[in-house]
Image (tube, rainbow, N blue to C red; front, side, top):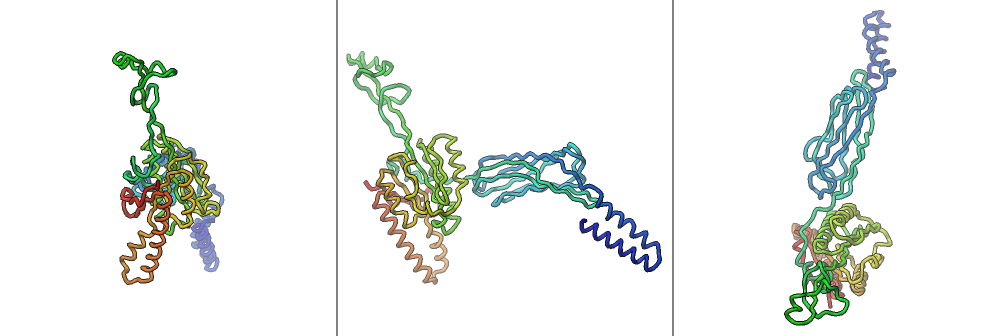
Length: 417
């Protein structure tokens, strides 16, 4: 029995007792309708919910912080509902920009209602599974609740950043990234040069004009673009990040580097390594871009004893002499594995979101904190020592303060020859 009906029944009993003590029928007459209403509610069925729901999203892939419009259409496939409340729970990290995630009103048989709102979502892979509904019989104060399924999913990768093109352009730190050019005979590829005919050359490569001019058989050489493999590794170890915001910056940087390499014609693989390994095999084109977006959206911090050190990474999945771009704050124990990568013939680039940058800015506001200043100085010396050893072992390092654009990342050194 609901609280209002229980209260009405208690009041009816009190009035009946008062009438019995005073011998007056007025109190019995007053108590009777209250008791009848309270008891009748126990024998009346609560409102029947027979609803159908359909959800639509304006985007199924949306950058972090971008507005997404959500619409839920409810159709009543049952009897009239006098008072209906529909509520859509937003995923964690979502913020409502406009509209309302709740609808209230009555709904006739076959009628439809719609709630519509605009929200922003944090990076992640989010599922909208159901809407909660509550039907109310206002006369008897009877309620029915249900969850109406209307599943949809949205992938929210990190916000794209302008990448450091100066460091990844031709002639910079990526001697193996992008497309290479190789001369060969054939058709359908860019012209390169000419040479004398050799047995086995296809007849379609013959240069008739050159043959008439020089009196010997000449064939055309053409250049063919061949895609090069590159792998982007996002460090997702909890032990490498003191601040979750630093990991969000690293995820955005990893996505942006992968897109830059795709734009340069590379076959790009993507890996997130922390509690486990999330691996996207090498690929090109729009489909590969969407796969990388999904992997960057799903990346989560975690720790696993097996993947605490980068030497546990399966390096065989990266083709020989390919580019390996690691996005990580870098720990001292990472020196050995990265040296091994370089020794195996990979072109290794480490993009380092500076974990001390925020501490430096915080300390600038507290100039009298000598203990923190000394601790920061020691950590800075350790970082410089680690970076100098990496540079000396053939690893190129890009140092980046996440408070500034990614394009401002500084190239500390180039791969040793």
